[in-house]
Image 1 (cartoon, protein in one colour):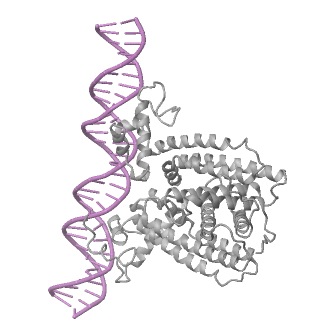
Image 2 (spheres, helix red, strand yellow; image 1 turned 135 degrees about the vertical axis):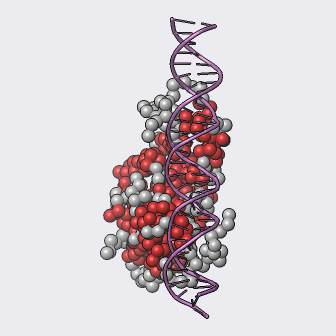
Image 3 (spheres, chains in turn blue, cyan, orange, brown; image 1 turned 90 degrees about the vertical axis):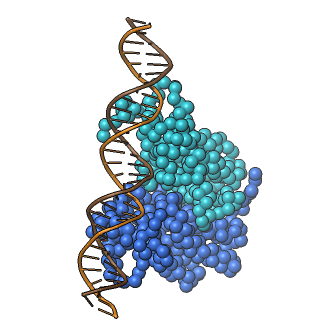
Length: 222
Length: 222
DNA sequence: CAGCTCAGTCAACACTCTGTTGAGTAACTC
DNA sequence: GAGTTACTCAACAGAGTGTTGACTGAGCTG
């Protein structure tokens, strides 16, 4: 009930208050340890003691740097968020002459961004269920990709390259959720899944067909 | 290390050995309590004491019926598995004259099956990460839907209604993972998501276009 | 019906993990 | 050299898990 001496109120960063730069290496060590351990264990299977020992500190000292395990994951996820930013915006200036190439670049960027921190991505996906902060941060990451997708589909419809049809937003959300799930099965070695080598091609096929074509008989019977 | 008196070796069911029918109502009470509590809490947030109290027994007695919380979830998931069986096989005998109607029925069946036990579905999705038994059971459930999908796509290609293209298996897996993820966001109230009322229509659009059509320019440039 | 078995039950224990307190130390500051 | 501030941890106080060992009562069996 009583918070830590001063580290819990008016917290500027996700971790400790950032007045002095000393001790940053400890914080960094905790983050590095967390990402290393997440490579072959669930966050739930990693104890705070594991994190502390990995960083060369005692368990109570851990609480000086982070209020909980989840806060560590959240900080890790912030970085993925930052990388997702630059990756998604890198696509904005591309030419739309060859749609397939453009969309392939987009899907690959999505894949590459999360692949670089797959342990974090998998851990975050699990932590979403029980932690609203993780859920919201992940939402924000996904929302970025969805928005990007929406804009491009809309511009393709505006210039007549893609036909009108179901709401752009719904399509963009659905396709991005598909990408997310397929990638997750690959990163977490779940089954059934698509072989990593064919994943982008398969996803691209679905994206192109559902954005640029319309079946003649989309009958809403029933 | 030492197991319970006799309940742990040569276990036939997921729960206790099933020699006598008495006490089944207790086991049932645990399962009912679990599904009720899962409606607004994570499995991790539910203690074994919660489950035991909900069923009107003490915590040690819980262990007479189930070896762990996860075993309860697994039993719950077995039922979904059984329902998924009948739902998926209900589709086998349908006519293929109107593909849109057939696929709509399939997607709706998937949706309905999991919707009936959405709390279990959401809990299982989370428990997959840390529990290999849950992971395998869920795999088996998904594999059923994928296999069903594969067979229908293949027969559509064979009769010339659908064009050849990317591997049937890859397409079937990808589309089912998309359905799974979109449904999960709806059940778990995640964002971004598709409004429940438009979900089936949106998914159907993607299914039809990626099964029956082929973009002229699926250029694998790069 | 006396004696035995066995499903079912739980108080009490041992253990692990979490989060907190309070007492420190070492550096830098005026 | 007195005071502040960053940082550290032994020790404590839970909460939860899984286990033990003793108990109850219904059902058989001789």
